[in-house]
Image (cartoon, rainbow, N blue to C red; front, side):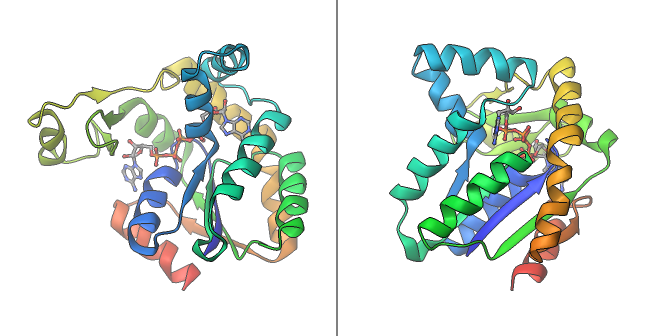
Length: 213
Ligand code: AP5
C-alpha cells in the first residue's frame, strides 16, 4: 500500500498509522518522528529544528524532503509506504510527486482524517506516549486499563514538548493556512478520500479501511 495520511495535528494520523503497520506491515514514515530524532542527535540542524517545532511552525521544506528521500531509499519497494505528517504544504506536495515519480512508486491513496478543532485541542493536550512500548495513549480518551498497563509495568506516560496549549494553537493555525490548501491539490489528482475522524479509534480505522480496500 502506498498511502498518505493527512489531517490536522491530533486528527489521529499516528494512531491510525500504528493500525495499518500492524495489519499490513506497511512502513510508516513520519516527519515528526524523524525530526524528533534529528533533535536528539544534538547537531546544529537539530537545535534549529527544536526551536521551530517548539513554536509550532513548519521546518524548512529542504530539511524534510531530505529526510523523506532517505527513508524511502531504505524501504523495500514491495512493502509500500505510509506517509504521516508529510507533505504539509503545496510546495512539499509538488516535490513529493516529483520524487515518487522519479523512483516509480506513485501514490495510491490520500486519506484526509477530518476532526473538529475543539476535539483536536483536547486530544493533543491529553496525549501521552508510554516510555516502554512507544504506544500513543490519552489521559482523556484511553481506558484506565490501557494507561495502567503502561505504568504498572514500570513505564512512564510522557508528554510531547510541543503539546502545550500555545504550540497546539499555533500548529492548528499553521495547518489551516498551509496544509489545508493541499486538500484541493490531491482532490484534483483524483486520489483524495475524506473520512470522519471522530468516534472510537476502531470505528475510524474501519472507515479508513473501507476507503483503501
Ligand atoms: P508531527 O509529529 O507530525 O505532529 P502533528 O502533525 O502535529 O500531528 P500529531 O502527531 O500531533 O497528531 P496525529 O494526527 O498523529 O494524532 P495522534 O494519532 O497522535 O509534527 C510535529 C512538528 O514537526 C510540526 O509541528 C512541525 O514543526 C514539524 N513537522 C513535521 N512534519 C513536517 C513537515 N512535513 N514539514 C515541516 N515541518 C514538519 O492522536 C493524538 C491524540 O489523540 C493521541 O493521544 C491519541 O491517542 C488520541 N486519539 C487518536 N484518535 C482518537 C480517537 N478516534 N478518539 C479518541 N482519541 C483519539
